[in-house]
Length: 82
Image (cartoon, rainbow, N blue to C red; front, side, top):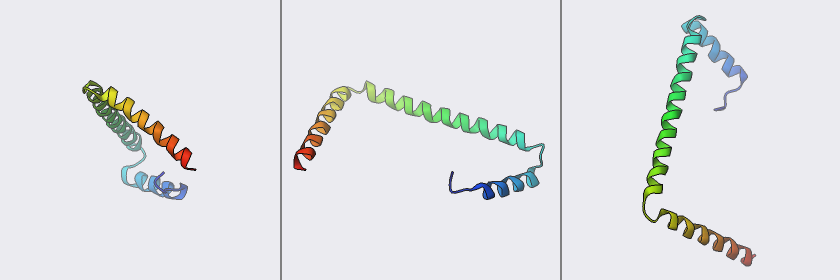
């Protein structure tokens, strides 16, 4: 987790308690959790929209099939070269 070990997390938690106090930490944690959830939902929406756009473009299905066949041929030629 970003190279943070237990001692580092304890120090960060102690600093947070000193700065915000014990009563504010649950509110801050809740707000942070909601913000992260909202951010993740936004990312998922963008990914879904991108997939919808690519599915609606003409020729995408055919291009995907051709790419699959080309990949199969590459695997076969690598196998034969060995």
